[in-house]
Every structure is written in C-alpha cells, then in structure tokens.
Length: 452
Ligand code: UD1
Ligand code: CA
Image 1 (cartoon, rainbow, N blue to C red):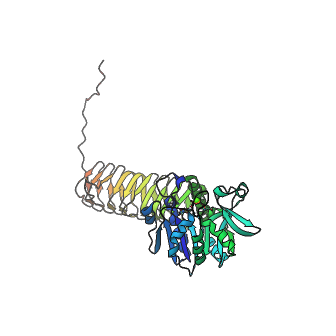
Image 2: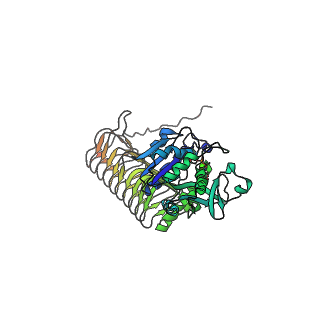
Image 3: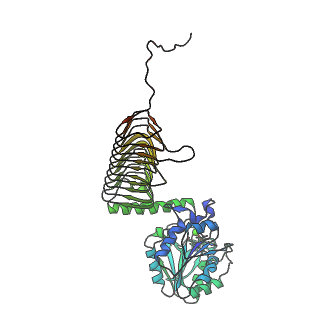
C-alpha cells in the first residue's frame, strides 16, 4: 500500500516554536512513532507531508526511501493529501495517518485496511467528550459523511462517534475525490473528510471500524493532551513490565524513554527514568529517583537512590550510589563487584573487579585495575586546561584519602599512596609514595584572644 503521513500543521495550541509533530512522546518525536508504526505495515511508498518546521521535521526521521512533500501554504488536510497524490501508486490503496496521532497500533491499521476491502475505510471512535473532532454522519447504519465541529449543527455536535482522521481508500478513487474538494466551509480549507460524502454519492462502500482501545486514536493538539498520551503510553509499558515479572514499586512513577529489558526478579523503586537502551540483568535493583541512559547492568547489582548513570557497562554484583554519577561519552566499564559510592563521579574509565571508590571522588579517563581502594576525596586531575590525559592505576593499589593524581600518571601494582598526596610522577609498584609537608607542633603556642 501507499502511506501518507500528514505532518504539516503548525500546532498553534502547543504555544511552541518546535513543530508539533516533533514534540516528544516517550523521548521520541511523535512523528517518529507514527513512522515506525507505518513501517510495520511494509508499505511500498511512505510519503510525509511537511510544511511548518521544514528541515527540522525531515531530520527527525532519518530514513531512506521516504518521499518528503512540502505543503506550502497549508490549506487543509485534503489539500495536504493532494500534494502527495503524484507519488501514490494506483495499484495499491492509500492509507492516511496523522503525525499527531502517535499511539495508533499497526494491528488496528491492518484491520482497517482489511475491513475496507476495495472501498473507503474510516477509523472512528466513540468518545465521552467529542468536542473538537469531526462527527460521523450516518443514514441508518450507512456512513454518509463527516461534518467538522465548526460546520456542525447543534444536533450534529451531540453525536459522539468521531472521525480519527485515519482513512484508507483505493488510490485512483482517492485522487478523483481530491480533485473535487472545495473549500466552502467555516475554515476555508480543503477537508479530506469530504471524500466520505463523495464516496457515498458514488455508492462506493464506506466501512467504519473502531480501534480496540479508544486511546489509540487520540490526537495531540495541546501540551495537556501530549502529557495525557505520555501517561497512557507509560502506564501500558509499566503494565507490560509488571506482567513480565519486574517489581515496579509504582507503575505510575516509572518512565521509559527508549527500551528497557529486564531479567528475572528486577526491582525498580519509584521515580526512575530509563532512556535510550537500558538492560538490567537478573536480580538487579534500582533505588528511587535514578536516571539511567544507555546502561547495561549485570546480575545482582544494586543501584541505590539518586544515581545518574549514562553510557556504562556495569558488571555483576556491583554497588552503585546513592548519589553516584557516571558521565556520558566514551563508555565506562565496571567489572564485577565494583563499589561506587556517594558523590563519586566516573567518566570514560574502566574499573577492575572488586575495586572500590566509596566517597567523594572523581575518576576520569582512567584505567583502574582489580581490588583497588580509592580513598575519600581522591581526584584524578585529567584535564590540564587544554588537553585530557590518561591515568593508569594497576591492581591492588591503595590510595589514601584526599589524593590528587595529576595525569598522565601511572601507579604501579600494589603501590600505596599516602593520604593527601599530590602525585605528579609515576608511583613505583609495591612501595609507599607520598608527598606531604612534615608535621610540626609548636610547643607553648597560644590562641589569639580578642582585644578589649
Ligand atoms: C482533523 C479532521 C477531523 C478529525 C480530526 C482528528 C479534517 C478536515 N478534519 O481535524 O475530522 O476529527 O482531525 O484529529 O480532516 N495537516 C496538514 N496540512 C494541513 C492541515 C493539517 O498536514 O493543511 C495535518 C496536521 O499536521 C495534523 C493533521 O493534518 O497532523 C490534522 O490536522 P488538524 O488541523 O489537527 O485537523 P483537525 O482540525 O484536528
Ligand atoms: Ca488535530
């Protein structure tokens, strides 16, 4: 089939300089969701009608083989499909989707196409509050037209069966109907919806079906509606995680903006946000208020509350946080049994099995071996103001508290660094290295007293 996605509207009611279809749902542009759904139907042609926001909209869907059609000016949904018409192959039917109806499921669209057969198919919904939508007009059971809210009589406005906007039609007929559209209506627009009465007049069959769930057909016109759809999306996702056996402390306080794959007996406390691609192994627990982006976590690892972890491979049986941060960039790799404690920041580093940095530490651009103990307040000075340098800390090193390692520097296997050391040269393996001013005590010294 051919698929046309309408995405040219400005979305005035969003009160935003971002084109409406680029507003994000679950971390991705609404248009990208619709596009993914369209692709599941393996269409021969996907045509996106864009206008408002031009290039930005094109960049949102980086995909080869899409036919981009500019609609300028924007004279209505019928006018939008007219712009796409030259690209639609008459051998197949054409399905029209909306860039601002992001939750529609491919399965529903398949049912619509099948139900329509060689006629016109409409996806409708019955809503408690139909305000704003086009209403479906029937003569007995037969669909005979659609009237827009702005053109409707009071009696028509009382109808609760609405047009979702999604239609499928034989392409040659669609083209002939489009050519007949007129704009003598309240909005002076060419309405796509007018093809329904044209079809009815030509005695082409018009079939209306409804989606299994009414949320599928909801459109986004305002921030409030976008927020509502976001919650619907997240609640469904949470329900499926619970179904798979993930212990979500509160399904209404878990947000996945990307993909979250979980092993068995994973527990996630409240207010966590998962972005990009996140994988949690068996028995992983994530404490409250964590943000994980593009992170893989090995089995049995515990992430305590308030951690912000990005671009990391975390091994099995690690203890992370509370209040730990792994910064984005070159992936950080933690082997098994690593402890990263509170107020510890790690960036572009690898840390070997069993090593610990439990308090107030910065480790950047470093390679840390196994069983290393990094004392409180240790800082790897990786940046000289112009360039970044690497630090190597070999296995079994003990670093005393409040140490600075001025990169590039290497600490040999089994070395000990005394507390307070500023390391500017390599520390030999197996020895104690320290840079420390000798301690003195001044006998008989007295504290100053305030002058009277
Ligand atoms: C449209 C339908 C209405 C339906 C509703 C469902 C028409 C005339 N009305 O109304 O029956 O109940 O959707 O949400 O079709 N667009 C363009 N170019 C344009 C105008 C719109 O590409 O010139 C795109 C928009 O980006 C949007 C979609 O078409 O994705 C719908 O446009 P919108 O202005 O929101 O239509 P509604 O008034 O909501
Ligand atoms: Ca709309």
